[in-house]
Length: 279
Image (cartoon, rainbow, N blue to C red; front, top):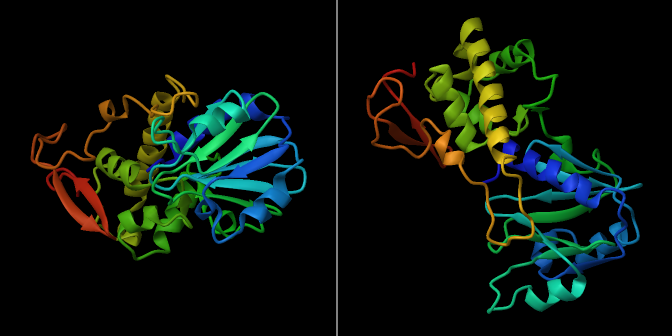
């Protein structure tokens, strides 16, 4: 699942490609991608509008229009594609021979921006404003925001009795950290993901804050070198596995103490950690 670094890399790459461009027409090839909204709602809101900015909050990407926003949530496998023209997009989209899946496509003056998720978990929706979008309105502080300070983080932790893994995955506290980078952050901070959030002392809280910020920053650097290639339907972020220290390494030696990495289930997700050096 794309987390903050992947979405931020997509936003940075997309901005110069679509900023100030008008949206003459929207193709909704799979209506499930706009649910529970209707395709006509998306079209009425966005067609004829100009893209003023490309923004990100947490794991959400959104296009700022003069009087509305379009949110894109990638869920597990969503991605963006770029086609040279509407004819080119329609010729290959959802054709067995091409293998190129497209759910929603935005015609622009220089090409076509398409959202694709073959598993149909991702969503493209239109809202009057950020405040009108429940998902954005309910997000906590962005993990790469300058407002995400050690003091604020300590305050948020102190108010919760949930395990710190569950706390971090709840986007209403800190937005943008998912399963992969939470596991990585706990490893770097030498903290057991089963610890209760309010049990962390001041030193541990600062350590975890530093780990979250550094893990996300390093992942973002990896995600933009090379940058996303929207013209390649098979493209995805490469090299991230080289910076991971604990995620998906069950049974392998800890890179710090050489003890075996364990995997447990938390909130229906797999958590990877070293029981020896993460306390």
